[in-house]
Image (cartoon, rainbow, N blue to C red; front, top):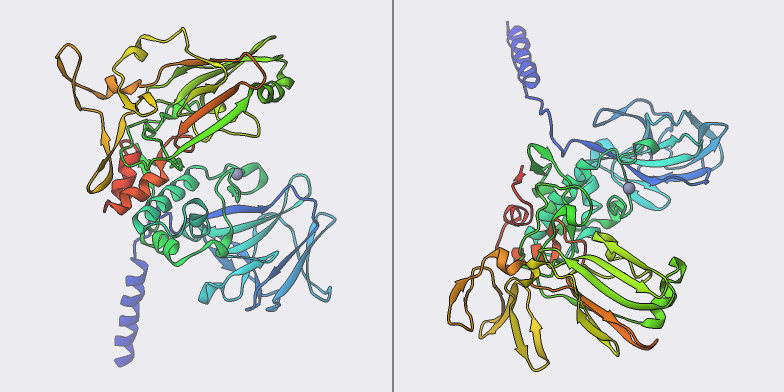
Length: 470
Ligand SMILES: [Zn+2]
């Protein structure tokens, strides 16, 4: 009788376990495959773990124990030979032979109990290592790792671990959404994402900090959704006071990446100077001849340059959208929010100013003369420096009429301009604000919002349009 009760209880318990609902989509439990080494002619790779290593199988969002062929050996060498991979110990004994088809995964023996790491060429990684023979017969080394564990090795590389927690949480969600939406980028090479800035910088466990891991764990699995799908959370350093529409930087119009006034952007200015001689030299391979002028032909409503033309005695070349930032080879511009000036040459308004550029402009008269203002005015009061958004401000004009400025009226605050040169020593001066492409979240703005008490969801919803965070 007693045995039957125990059996019945065990059955109830087993049924209870079975009825735990399986989540259909949980990014914290999703795995990603990261390319650590590829397009390399190296035929050997070293793996190690102080707990010993185990040969397993790549499972469906898991690593499955399948054999103990390595017998707990802690240091192994993978050696590619005749289309197979031999697993050898330090003495050269062959412990196993692998097909390298992407199904074989090597982990630390402690992986299943203490989440221990595996080291590849001296760098520790969470998850497992997959040796994969690519189409060219080369050995790729891949890291098969849970999404959150991957983001732990990314976060500090994208935003300093010393930033406040809410900003780090916003960055963690953004990085996770980016990874999910870019999954399969390197499919033809056998993995999802690479470990460089082409996808996201990832350096494994050595990139982890208490603060960044807390930001990842406290937002576990959360992403940015637009129209029900996770979307690439683009980000950059500093907006200069306004962010950009995605199509004005690249090509696709993304509903969640709309340009807007950024009232939390800390001031960040920069300046690049080129002599005419330097410019002539820089553009000689394009057959421009001697450079005679540089002009910004048009600006977007965001205040970012939309088109820049370099004219020479033989021909001219025009750069548009984000190509403008890399137009001056070897001396990239930090952003496209800039104005032209000169030392020695002539600065004139470009003749083709569109009607939009004649909208309301705000001027400040300073000791250096008259200056055109952007949408954000910095105000120094007894409480320190703060930003005043000029949108919605009331204006008393010369005729005594009072109007309220709208975003439209304040949008185009910069006119097209041109610098003409007369001699080789004449200088082009480019004075800019902001840093980065301008699409999505400003990281410095996110840090400023965090300091002012906003949550990571407030930050994400401020920089991305019509999104959900879940
Ligand atoms: Zn990549």
